[in-house]
Length: 196
Image (cartoon, rainbow, N blue to C red; front, side):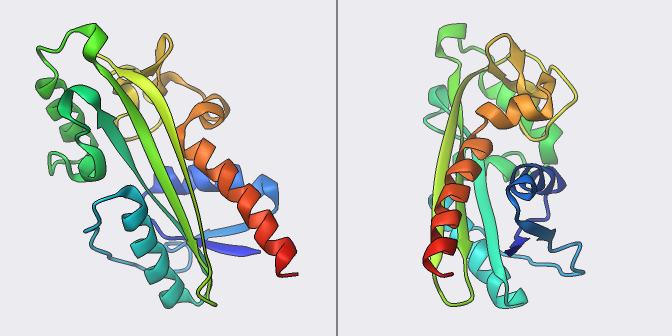
């Protein structure tokens, strides 16, 4: 089955391909197809935003389209940045990380808890839809650590290391997106079997 990934985020494209291609899915990004999709994310939940992007990409390409919306939800900030994670500071990943550090400046270690959350939606040309969600609990660090990953990864600690220090396979095994994609793949295989 061919899937188009409805994102312009190259980090997400790499993660989607890394997990979906070994499971037998043919995956292309909009960029690889020479297409650009600019969708305003106005949803109040990650799933609403993922659905909006998947539906738009499906209409644009005529293919089954998969999209995710994900972000960091920090307990001491009442769940912020949440659905605004990518545009938290308006200054990209570095600006977002610096703003988060400022917001948590006076928050002690036991209260620096949070989670990455991911919602995935796949929209099919016939109007069918599959969804999956995943979370990963962690702690927000005091400084950036590691050069891998993207977004808040250098500040998000699971165990002794930040996601910025995890290898790809290690991260995929425990991350919010990895969990959501594996659940999605199970649902997609069921869908394929029912529609064979």
